Every structure is written in C-alpha cells, then in structure tokens.
Image 1 (cartoon, rainbow, N blue to C red):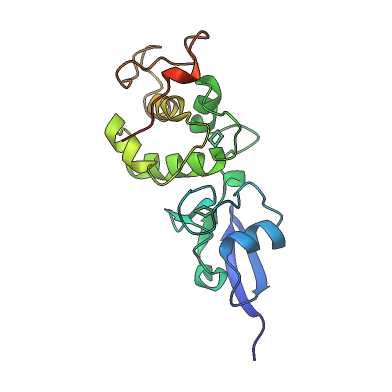
Image 2 (image 1 turned 45 degrees about the horizontal axis):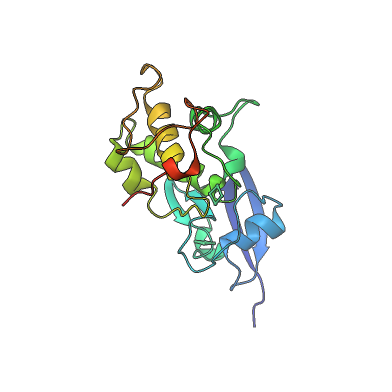
Length: 186
Ligand code: FES
Ligand code: FES
C-alpha cells in the first residue's frame, strides 16, 4: 500500500515538492506541512469558507480538496496576497472599513474577494454578496466586509459613496455605528 504520494505544487509563487498521504486535504498540507496557518480549520465540510484558497485562479474550500488533487496546481493562500511587504488593496480596504471583528473568517473572505475582483474588477453590491456567499462570518460583520470589497474595487470613489444595504451604517466612516447596524447578505 502506498502511504504517501509525491506532488508538486506552486504555493504563493514558490514551487514545493511534497509527499502527501492520499487522504490528506490541501488544507492539512498547507497548515501542517507548510506552516501556512492563515487558512483556517473550521467546519471541514465546505460550509463556512474559512479555509478558502485560490487554486489555479479559482476560490476553493481547501478542506474539500485532496492534496493529491492539487498536484501541478498553483495555490494562493492569504499569506500570498500581500506583496513586497505591502497589503493588497483589498486587505487595506478591510482595515479602513473596520471589516475584521474576531478575524477568524477574514483570511477566507480576503481570498474570495481577491478571486472575485480578479475576474470581475468592478462588481455590483449584489455580485459582491454572491461572490462572498460561501464565506460565513459568525461576528456578522457582513456590511463592513461588503463595503470594503466595493471600496477596493473602486478606490477613486468619494468616501461614503459605497452602495449600502438599507439602514446600514459603516463602522469605517461612522465610529458611532454599532453591530446592530450590520446586515447579512441575503
Ligand atoms: S473549514 Fe473548509 S469550508 Fe469550513
Ligand atoms: S470576523 Fe469573526 S467570524 Fe468573521
């Protein structure tokens, strides 16, 4: 019986040669073998999106992908989003808009947002909601997350012009905003 298979995968721009157990997921290999713990282990059944990475430009739940399936692939984790010591536009917008609460879901949200803007640089609010629908946030900071992605997509828009859900206020632009003002995407 073969207990480990050789795979070659490019992770955050670096080629890696690994031997992986056939039942190990991409998430396990990223976290346990490569020490990339930005992708989070949460539901492990493809429900929450905390483990989201990009595989060949597509966002996937890495808890549902076997590491052997990623052989020959190109993986981007949240650790690979910033470049040259600078946050990506999306990461900076998350900071500016107070989009991180506990932060547990944020790596997956960031990666999904990066994948969305890579294919649709100027999404509507509805497209952002749909693009991030697979990423759950238990802190329910959805409004700030959506605002951050919209702002990253349109950095020249005047402050406060981002389309909001009815009745929602932005923590980023209104320090008095409370969690009650946040709404989840439908
Ligand atoms: S940990 Fe992978 S989807 Fe929840
Ligand atoms: S910021 Fe806490 S789960 Fe989303």
